[in-house]
Length: 98
Image (cartoon, rainbow, N blue to C red; front, side, top):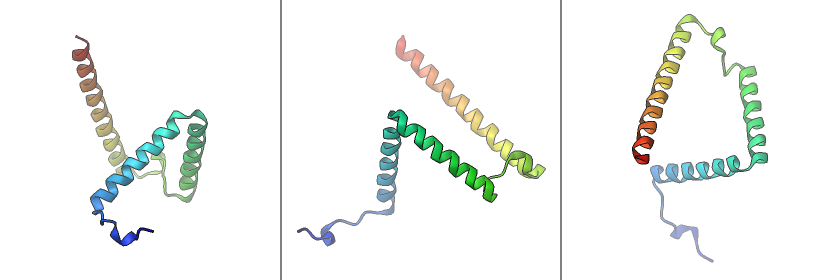
């Protein structure tokens, strides 16, 4: 029976990489199965509602004007980054077709 002492120690980066790969694989499996996907969405919704009830998640209308500006600025940044990525991907797809 092999001993666990012979296993090489992994660095924090290697452990994090391994963990993220496993998480992506798990999500791909969930997304490929409609039943698992519906269960996953339901659980995520319940987690969101529980956090909202505890006050860990605030609606924009419940924030101070300063917090609202900060959040909206973040939304604007995310949206512009998303549109830029879509534009780049679209341009890349057009060149592949030609």
